[in-house]
Image (cartoon, rainbow, N blue to C red; front, side):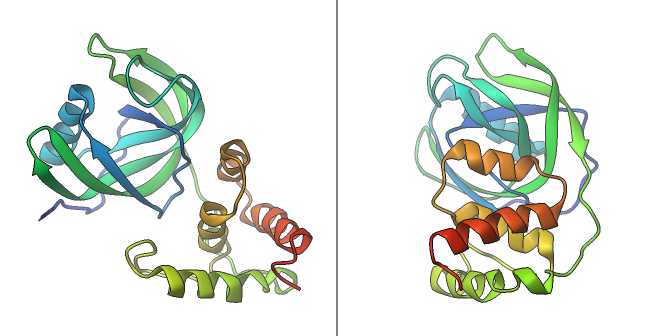
Length: 205
């Protein structure tokens, strides 16, 4: 297995898109099995030039075949590890990065999509409010049970944004609801929604 550099790079104005039936959050882990030529070529270029790609939830269509219509909001991904177990089959692990909104989207002749994007700023780190602290022990237990492969360091249980993103990844909710949580700019509002869900389902007191 080969490690690709994950050092910080300037954010490009245009990125290739990978519409998926999932929502990627900043700091999250994405494992993909690539076999379509358009995505093999995309991954090769991203690794060669240390470029990111964008992950968006599919609005219409499917992950394979014709170009799917993505939702306008997504997260950047950078390839951290890759392995080619057999010719034409590439396994990659990527890490979620900054959020973006699609400004303009193009479908290329090979059905790969690219987009001009507007990057969405994250708020400064802030602690989890006392009224919502019951979320943190539950998340600690989830992270400990899942292990470092699913939740690699750094763990920031004192950061409301990080806690909200990690909980949003694991909640048993529809993809559309997960996307709404990704779109929220206020980490406290995100935690309040998650806290209400957990209380409603008796997962916290």
